[in-house]
Length: 372
Ligand SMILES: [Zn+2]
Ligand SMILES: [Zn+2]
Image (cartoon, rainbow, N blue to C red; front, side):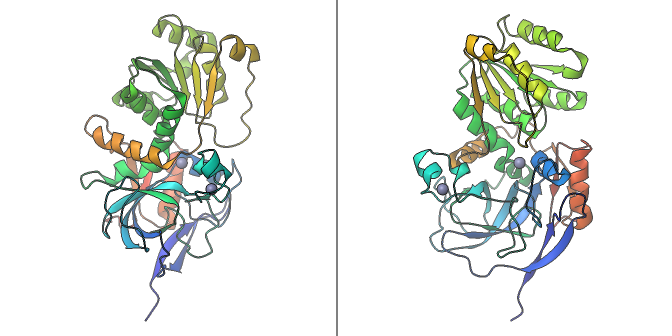
């Protein structure tokens, strides 16, 4: 019998063109694993930074770590998802961004499975080795044992489901850790996918007011649709003006929580300045090295600030993100911000990365069976 093969589009290195390869589709699905057929994968800002060379990245690699797929085959022992829902072939699922071992120091002792000593991250590994299908830019994804998996409700769109795997679950993870309190006043820096999730989710978590700060007016208009009460274009104000504006909007004391979702060092230092005494700074935007911030260290001590970082998340946070986006799918335009759609070809993947770099899209998507 002929071996069935399928396509992946691989990142070959900074400045090099993507290339398409065909590899055998895995036939031996180990216990605890799932073979899924990619329905839709969105391209994340972190992918774009890796592609541009802002951080070291293994090559060749199948990028893409925001994926929704359909179960083709399940290994022994897989019959339910992480939330306890039954699973069958044909169901759509969203996996966690990582597979972790469950027994190492970070998994077991420190409850940080996203930093597992044997961590495997979808869309982040050298991919010219079996099982080849390691990321979203492929027709299939081999979901390893040790991955959290959540069944996608039948009436949830692929566009709503794919970005849960990175942007959305990172925010639920961060809000869990940072301790947003009921009626808190929140400032969110950034109106990209992570920022929009931070705005919508802090509202759902009980924030009284959310101020979104960005530097693209079109994006700030989108931020309003996701629940921002006030938007500020940071390009139009100097630091002192911006801090005064935010203080005026937050009862004169400053915000309770600032969420830095851009990776901008200006946002980080402004956040420390504008926070009220006892405030919290959530840092999720800086995901590549080099961002140095000059701060007056006494501000942290004297203002009794808490600084909380978040990189990736625990499986439960993906479950929370799914439930929240599903529950608010008629309230916020989750589906509408996913565009344009590209086929799984070299030109398609290149087009998606360029759309993100040129900021013509919040979240471009790869759809392997895109109707031409
Ligand atoms: Zn990402
Ligand atoms: Zn581990």
